[in-house]
Every structure is written in structure tokens, then in C-alpha cells.
Image 1 (tube, rainbow, N blue to C red):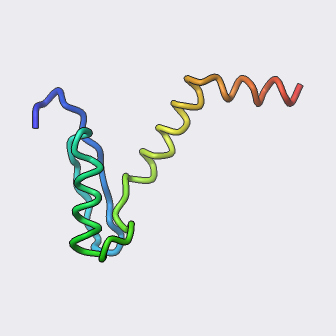
Image 2: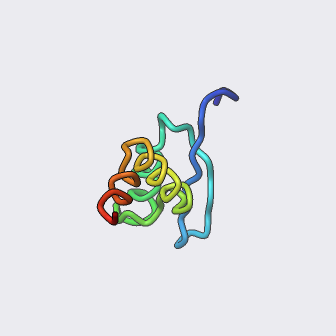
Length: 73
């Protein structure tokens, strides 16, 4: 993995593991882990704190927070 390539933390509470994978391999890594360890059940996931932060950034970028403020006025 290149030092410039972003990596994403994935966690599996059931296995009590956490690892970082390259962003471009994220879907494959999650699918592989869940298939091999959990019969395909979606147990391992992107770190929830990262998912929440990304959702906030996307909402901000799309102006969704501005719309909420406008609706409340």
C-alpha cells in the first residue's frame, strides 16, 4: 500500500479485530472477511465513527444542513 493511498479502518466486534485496508479494496476485504468468518452475514464493517463522519461531510457538501436550517426558520 502506497503512503498516499487512503486506508479505511474496518472492525469486527464478533472477532474482536480491527484493521485498515486500502480504500479501493474495502468492499472486497469486507466481503471476504464476512464470507470466510461469518457465513456471509455483514458483521465486519467500516468503523462506525468513520461512517458517521463521512455521512456528515457528504450532507454538508450537499447542503443538507442548510436546508434543515431553512425549514426551521
